[in-house]
Amino acid sequence: MKTTILATIVATTALTGAASAEVIFAHGSNPGNPRYTAAEKWAELYAACSGEEVNHAPAATMGDDAEMLTSAAAGVIQVTANSQGAMSQVVPEVGLLGLPFLFKDLPTAWEVLDGEVGEMIDTRAQNAGLKVLGFWDNGIRNITHVSKHVAAPEDVKGMKIRTPPDPMTLAIFEALGANPAPLAWSELPTALQSGVFEGQENPLTNIYSAKLHEITPYVTMTGHKYESTPVVAGLSWWSGLSEDAQKCALDATAEAGEMQRQMVLESDETLRPKMEEEGAKFAEADTAAFQAATASVYDDYAEDYPDLVAALKAAAGLE
Image 1 (cartoon, rainbow, N blue to C red):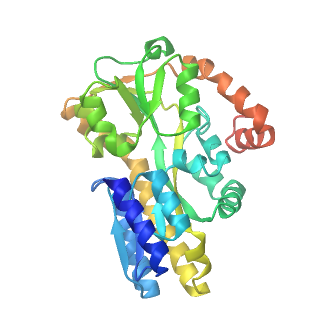
Image 2: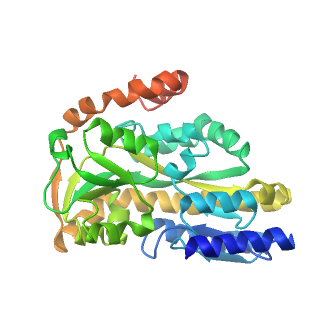
């Protein structure tokens, strides 16, 4: 249905040539998720600054992440708080932010994204008709399973695990010997309930807001990769804004993003006891063993992006 709706909107826009009378800010998260809260804040800030009306479209009502990027480039929507996985299909280099165990903590990741790496990603995105307004956060990810903890790499072997549509995440779990498969976020709860997958991986804030811990109560704190939330505008819309309106968009992204990042950071401390009260069972992972088991992912990506892999490792303090 979502795809049909999106196709109709695209076709109607193409036929009429009419520009949107409002700014549509779309994303895939539900109420209770920091991305949802930050999007509401963005809408409030941008509307107050620019005088334009903002339509906040959450919960994948405008399609999945890949569809939202396509419709932003086409001018159907104006802004999307998207995903690193979908963005890596447009700008492959953004996927390198998810190299296994790259960032020791969230502030380190933010420092890298707010510097030259973020500027490079923006330049590449503009070649694809998109403008990166900034990077919100999607946390450091952990694995949940329906019936067991996965504290060691051998526990993951053969596991049917859902991943986002992200080549990096697939590469990590293939290196661990799992059976990963990508699936849209909006379809994940149903797929877990039906037994298509034994588990999935996400930051605690996403797991909790989607109630995935009720379906997959065994949570192993693997911390295997980081993901950002690129906030992306259609380049045609962005280019048509006045300098003042562009500043409104950038300032709204930064202010809402500061709040969103802190919410994600705090959630790792506050959500664990909450989830345990609701029946989730936590275990720590053998991080050194997981790092050794996924070292080949660095080697594979260094063949195609030697300079960037080296630069990211240096910026993250791994060299």
